[in-house]
Image 1 (tube, rainbow, N blue to C red):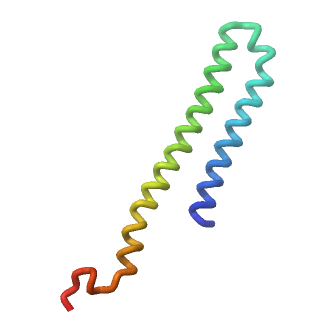
Image 2 (image 1 turned 180 degrees about the horizontal axis):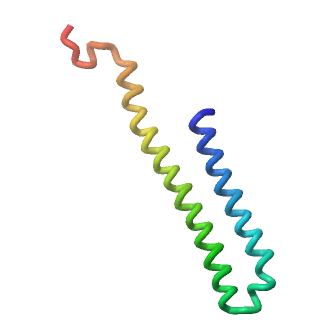
Image 3 (image 1 turned 90 degrees about the vertical axis):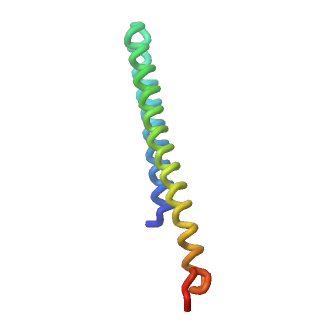
Length: 89
């Protein structure tokens, strides 16, 4: 599996997890809304879960871009003739 496919799969996984958190919060809302503490816990739990998934996804984005940046110069160097690498003959 290509790295870009894996990256899309990770993103899709986090999106699915976010949707599941929202759906579970909707189901729980009818009972949680009767008590202020339960409401606060439900909202805080859903928000922190989504924020955590976003941070993990963002870290994969940063990691992917760093890897791409390091790979590009190496790819360019491999395509250059030996004389361009400073070889003495």
